[in-house]
Image 1: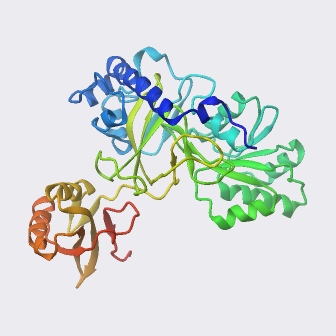
Image 2 (image 1 turned 45 degrees about the vertical axis):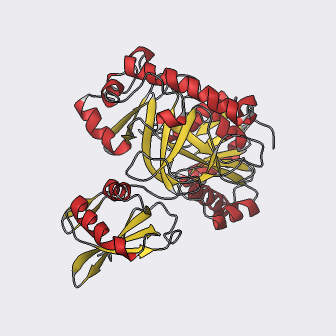
Image 3 (image 1 turned 180 degrees about the horizontal axis):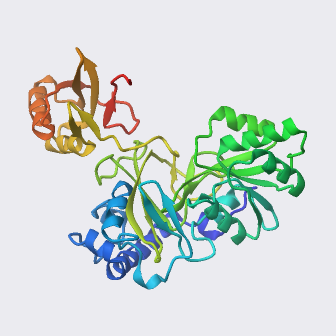
Length: 410
C-alpha cells in the first residue's frame, strides 16, 4: 500500500513549514489569551510573532515532569486548557498523578493517519488491545479507527484466552496494542487450536519492537508498523510501509533539544523530543516529553514529505544524585556555554574507593591547557569536584546522554 491519507502528506516541505508557522503564531496568541496557565508560563516571553521554528525556540519549555505540581496548584489541568474550548469529552489519569483532557473532534489524538499508513481502511475490523482503563491508549486508537470507518473490538488488556477466541470468531484483520502482546495472542491461538490468521496488519506502540520480533511477526503473516504517542500529545510520529524512521504527524512540530535545555541539537544528534501540538482545545507549546530521539535527514521512500525521527531511544531525564547532591544536565550545558571552545561534554559518574567520582569528558581542540579552567567551572556550577578528560571532537557517543551514571546497582 503506497497511497496516502491525504494531500497534506505529500505537500512541498517549504509550504508545510509556512503553514505551520502561520498556525503556530495564532496558537500562541490564542493560548495566552484563553488559557491562564499559558499566560503565566509565557509571561516573560515574546509571544506577539512566534511564526517560525527559530521564534519557537526562544520560548520556554514546559516539562511533563512539572505538570503534576502545576495541576495541583491550579486544578484540574494547571490552567493549560483553553477556556473557550468547552468541556473535554473524557479525562484520563497518568502516574503523578497527571490529568489529561481528551481533545475535541472525531479523531482527537490524530491517530487516523498512522492507522491508514499501517494499512487500515474503511470497512476493516480492529482488535484493539490497548487499555481503556483510566489511560488514553485504547481510546486514542479507537477514535482514530472509527474516524476511518473501521469497526473496533475494544479488547483492552488481559483475558488472553477470551481475546484469542474473539479473534477466531470475529476475524479482525488489524491489531492495535503493544508488540509483545500480539505475539502472546498469536501463540495463545495456536495453543488453543484457534484460527487467528485473520490478523494480517497492525499498529503497535508502547514498547520496543525488536528486529527479531518484527521478523517473527512477518513470518507469521502479520505486517506491523510502529507509532510514537504520548497521553498528552496523541500520535506524534508513525512508521509507514517503508519502515525507515517515524514520520512526524501533521499538526505537530517536533524539536530535538539538548537534554535539560531549550536548545535544538544538530540534525542526527540524539536529544530530547519536544513537541508543539496545534490544538485549540488543549494547546501544548514546546512540551518536553522526556524521551530521546534524533532527526533523520531527507524524506521517507514512501513519498511522505514530513520530517522524520529515529523513534524512541530512551529517556532524557538524567538528573543524578552525586555525593548527596543532585547534578542536572542543565548545569553541564551551562558549563559548555561558559567555554565556547568546548563542543560537547559528558559527565560520567562512577565509584572508586567506596566514593562517588565524577569525570567530565570534553570534546575540544583547545588541548589539555583548558582542563584546569573546566575543573574550576565544574566545581563552581555543581559544587562538587571532578576530573576533566579532554577528548578529540567526535569521540563522545551520540546517545543523548549528558550525564552517564556508571555506578554499580545494588
